[in-house]
Length: 421
Image 1 (tube, helix red, strand yellow):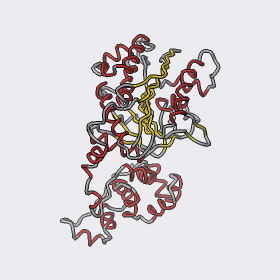
Image 2 (cartoon, helix red, strand yellow):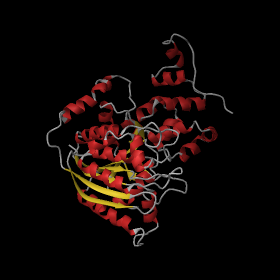
Image 3 (cartoon, rainbow, N blue to C red):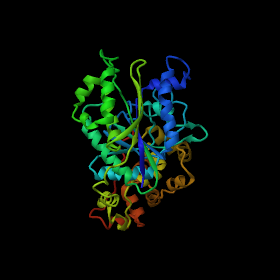
Image 4 (cartoon, rainbow, N blue to C red):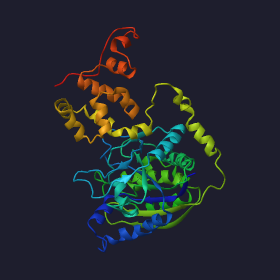
């Protein structure tokens, strides 16, 4: 089974990335940042985790018009996001879709409602501290795979501190019950005390930060009944994002060994790090790994026996992402216009593979379903090409339209196309 090697608590201020990219390594004002992360770098080199579960919040970059409480990154890789001045010059980091699907199933079985994402960039909440924690280069990529968990901590209402901690507890069992022999590290990011908006911007509270880190290590449950408003009063409004540290702590053993702790306040936000080594469970969990895996699959038993049925699983969504993304892009009038004028150019622009191009070119509706396309993307292609839903249904069943219509109560056809402007 998977083994949890420990956790990292870290700030994720863009100050860190700025200092690194500007090569301020020996500047006396900036040097303490890098000194604080050197033990963390060494920890990753020694522990060699296969996957890093990375808990952070997006800063209205990739998640703007859709803002989830808990979003799980299930993609094959994650690029650096463009936050306004172009993305940072760092390589994409690889994901682990198979591990992500297992974690998702356990979390949903434990009644945590998730959203899933791929094809979105990760902003400074992820890559700012990550770039000084984990070895990476353009040729070899990153020394670890990433499972990002994006938490909605910027809009009200947001989940409570206790909810974040409970999420961490379920996350621990999700990781432990993964049947493959991998090592997993967990990072909780954000904070500590800071506020970046309004007349109260520039607020810091080092005394609270010190108390919070001490309780996080020794008595995290003492923090669970702090309302968000109290966390904001003590640590600034944006500083209330320390609830993500509680998620990480909940995913570790009850007792941890802290081998490194640092705190540096250069400007608006403290730059703090902690290394918390997992000491293992004192007693075996109440629910065995086998029982947990059986429970997480309970809702889906027998699906594989349903003839002609292809549930849109995370595995299928990752496999078919490029083609699904292209078909969805037909909702953009500019892409739609190009496709109608030159299908091959539109598909080449989208980077479709030869097989994906063939599926679209031949309007191989059932082939696209088998490939991993969700039906509602077929509707969009039909709308653009003037093909009705009934035509698609008939093709998927290997029937002519008249033959299929005879199986319906009304001999109609329809589609989702609206009116072009």
